[in-house]
Length: 346
Image (cartoon, helix red, strand yellow):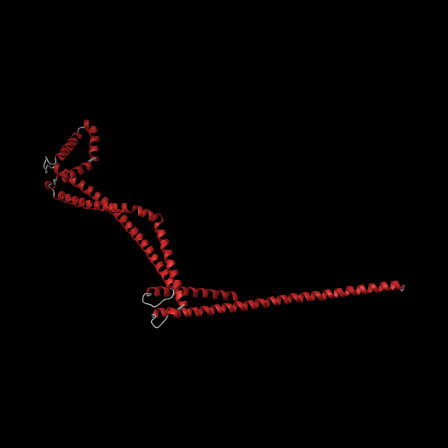
């Protein structure tokens, strides 16, 4: 039962110690914050040490915050680059699809002789060649020879349509298109190409940003962030320790600096610390009393055990004494027999 009670008291003492540590830190922190206006002359060296630890802590946290801000910005740039590349690919696909459609419309208009023959000469050449192949395909003798050529031209149809669209874009022939749909397709292509150009500029800008910060990013990934994080945590722990030591010292020397001008918030902390110290002292006294009582009980148990040993030994001694007495009586009887033999009486 005492062991359980002592364990409970030990836990409550540990809780009181932790509360005193937190109160000491709070007292040191708040006293340091208003040290310039408070007439606190005790513990100046401890205050200066705490101030130094605070500056070191701030510097370490600023370095860590700057690195994390950089990593966040770098990750955002990476994501933006990936999105930009995706949009460029999407624009390329749409431009290609619309260019093929535009080229098909140009081919159709040329097949109907609706466009300027000189400006669209290469398209008309293809139209004539396709018509020739279709006509000659009807000839049984040449059918097998021409079938391969037709297939080749059909497979290259998209490339040809793309070249027609390029002809219009690079040659400035948009105004000569005869179809409103073709003109609309051309406008969509040009808008997409303008958008793609803007995206390409964004891509170059993002690649430059990522290239400039790549070595710093690699260093952070290889452990730079972890190192700074550990350093910041160590600096923070050192600051807390210094402020706790300062606050504990102020508490122990309260009579030297507390006066009528002491802020109420500091007085409240001191009052709370006094209360916890009183509770802790009572717990320590209870522990000492229990330990003392336990030692008394142990001693009594040892006395009882030793007395039991004495009782056993005394019983054994009585038995031995009886045996000794019996042996002595036997010896006496033998000695009496010897005397009788010597006297000739036997």
